[in-house]
Length: 292
Image (tube, rainbow, N blue to C red; front, side, top):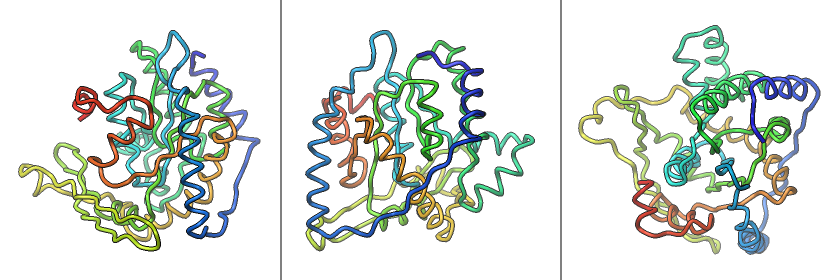
């Protein structure tokens, strides 16, 4: 289904005014139920593989879900290069609007610095402009990163375009917190790096995990800055909001048979080949190098 800005904005306005949702987190599961959950996910992944085939005549239209800092942008960007569709990150759209110092910038700055979710109306307006630009450039397909974050947003999106597959990246919370606090950006080139060296020992039946730091090249090393919202207090608030508002989005897509849950086993070297296999894209050297 083609996406047009008037339709997108009309749907956004109509739905955003009247819909709301929210679910509370359930209690933590024991080890036995965790094992059962992993088995269920593996079976579900096998069933979801045919969803790789997008309708004839257009490219893939995928969504990436996952807690803040899980690596949605990293993997979505790699897959974008691999399958030839634009990677649209709503976080980047918000940051671009902040940098533009437009009428929304001060309002957005306050929201972002507190770790809160940007209101649906603002996100939909920014997204609609990006999708309009995509059409103007003749792009087809997309990978959405960071949207939808609420059931309300998912319902808006469902009303204006078809989503083929939703990839839900999962990582242990202790690793997520360390990753977020270790993020650094080069103030000159804008490159993203991470100084955290994560080494979690295996216990209670869970395997250990190692994630090497992603250090900057020498020319960027002295220009590293930290995002203003990457403080422990803000990161924990983002994770709390995610669990409260975005977890239900997983159920939204699970009920529609479109959710592929993927537990990251470690850093990029360990996770990337396995993600390609889960997506039925193979793991040959050409594909790995194309997205490196």
